[in-house]
Length: 188
Image 1 (cartoon, rainbow, N blue to C red):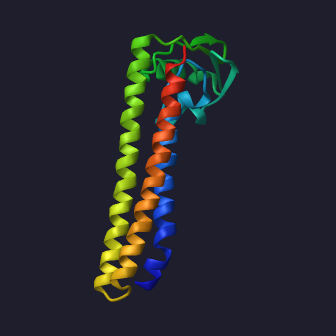
Image 2 (image 1 turned 45 degrees about the vertical axis):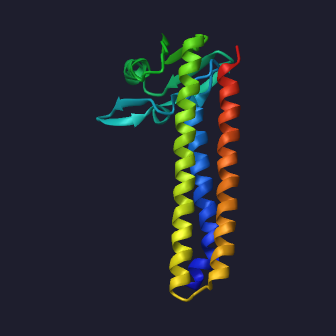
Image 3 (image 1 turned 180 degrees about the vertical axis):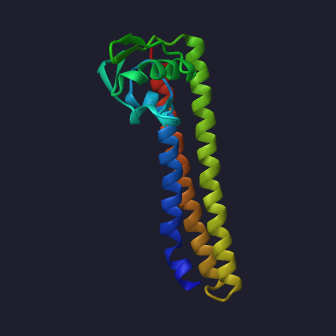
């Protein structure tokens, strides 16, 4: 149990960092009116009898600020990739050009921007909850350590305060990430 207490802060920080990294990955998938290769990360193409991520059957690049280019490696999958992008719910309409797809990124309406900002808020709230759950787990370990006689009450209180400070730090990072994403979404 002593080892648990010693490595606890590093483990909690690692888990909180994971929650923040997950949030940033979700934010990459939110369309902001600018082209991004990460915009197509969630697109799944039926290929070779399996559901395959688009980036495993094609190369995705951004030649211009409002254009995504997708080079499909197997010409028999061009139609499937085109349908998968259209059906992904991203509001994108690829233009087939031989073995390539050109995907123009249309400007966002004010209503769509508000929806995306709201969705970003939901993602960040989920990240805050994840950070708080890590805090709860850490406090539980400290309480068990105190009951087991591994640490005394003063040490438990001091370490609980450290866990709370770490939690506050990561909640602030989540809030900063949300603020930056909202500003990016609302830019006209």
